[in-house]
Structure formats: structure tokens, C-alpha cells
Image 1 (cartoon, rainbow, N blue to C red):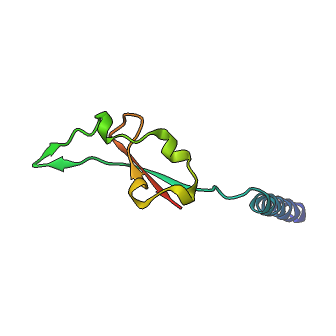
Image 2 (cartoon, rainbow, N blue to C red):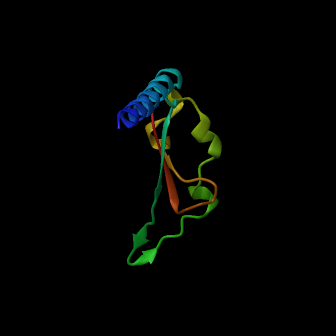
Length: 89
């Protein structure tokens, strides 16, 4: 019985040490980038937003967080009208 206690305590300590090491050594992501499924309906009909004029260049997702303007934080890209991308600095 006592060996089980030490084994569980050892595993728990190892997990905590590994989590602490990872927390201290792995930097957080520079930019928060969310994806959300969405659709726009007008009078019960789904609006087709797959045209190029509704898409943003993928390079906009790789700019500095300070360079992202409020109007650029929400956009579509890759020709996919079903997923909206949201950036938060």
C-alpha cells in the first residue's frame, strides 16, 4: 500500500515539474488568432461570401500585432466563406 502512495506522489510531482518547466520556458503566442464558423442569412437565404472581394490576403495574419488595425481584425481568407478569422493584439 505504501509503495502505491509513493508511486502516485512521484507521478504527480513529475507532472507538476514538467508543467512548471514548460510554463517557464515556452513563450506565449505573440498574437491571439481565433477561428469561428459562421454564415450570413438575408431573408432566409444564405449570402454567398466566397468571392475574392470578400477575402483578405493571408499575409494579414502574419503582420505585427501593432500593425493590425481594428478594421483588419476580422476577416475571411483562403476562399473559405464559412470561417471567420479574428485577431486580438
